[in-house]
Image (cartoon, rainbow, N blue to C red):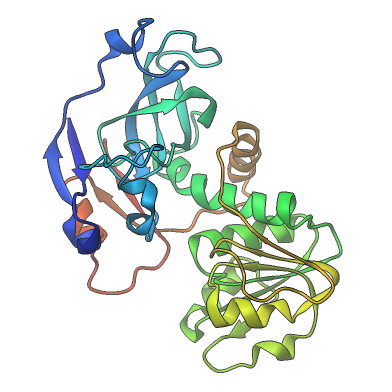
Length: 314
């Protein structure tokens, strides 16, 4: 099968290569001596890639810290189940699915991927594979940050950093739908995109003073660093700073600070795709490329807008 692999930590996305790799063996997968209990083989139709995943230790080593290169990156996919391992329940061969793969195993920038069945959710027939792949990471990250860790409720206010990006635009839409008042931040060039996704007030991080927005109940931070530190001071008493940028250095005076890593969740994926189907949530796809063109797509000459999706099959 065709797959994108990486072998050099220092090369970044420029070190990606398109190669031929063996396909997962369906017969072995279905045997008692096969792969992990509960795995399925997915014929990948569309795949996503997170811009910084080549800096993650899990891209290069397995759970025991052993080198696993050449590894296949990408952890978001939409496709069709082509084989089931021993003991798998809840899915069937030929079923359309989408989901998030394990960090320490080969990923989704390939024609086939082996995924734990519990990490996958049914993808309705009227949702395009590219759309399905595009909402997995961003949708789950936004959902878990807002509602699990941020405990966002109707009538509260939330500041979403990077509101024009894949995660930020999803967080903006989900927060607005929940009845929250949404402020968003970003660069000046991102203002209109953020407003189009539902931001009610926009903070230009290049020209505006962040502190002038006053207090909010929740900050959803993707930046960390100086922006994350300054954001801690914006959280009202009893509020929360939620970040995906690592443990925060600064914490709210009378509130919580939570950093988290997104996890697969079938029920949450179902909730997200339901909102996509009825038009309450829009995807933020910037570019769709083929697997043959994936390396070039991940090394663009200009800063991409929205998420890049690789359509593995037509």
